[in-house]
Image (cartoon, rainbow, N blue to C red; front, side, top):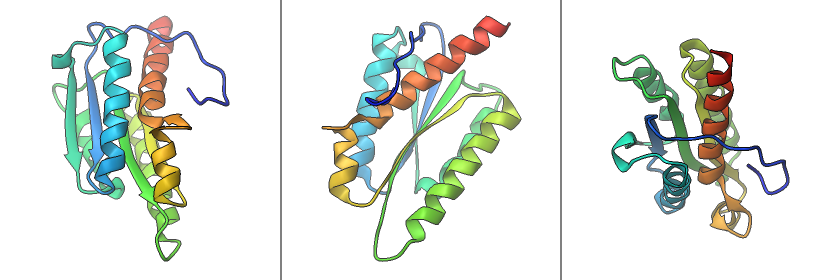
Length: 158
């Protein structure tokens, strides 16, 4: 979880299937998020065959692809959405980030498949890099950890 927030106990990824859904926009940042998420899932017992990576054009497209994946016959146990929305010359980045967050949340609630938010929303590329394996940790790792936590809670409710 966040360096400023509590770390929970984690959960096992063994025997569970994960989809890492990654935005191609700001690809260099997203690649670091993928590395962090994959490393965390592997440390918690996920096999490489149980981690599937799917690229989409940008953060705005993440929800529609997440919805299709969550509704598929081979639906994963969790989806980890990864990407970076960085401020440009206008405030459009806020609209994109909000649409992605709302869409991903809607997919998670409507399908019952946990979809975690590993999207960095940053003012600058330097700020994004700091949160993608730099001084501020790795948001991809945090999102994968959140997926394990939610699966653990859901398992305890069964």
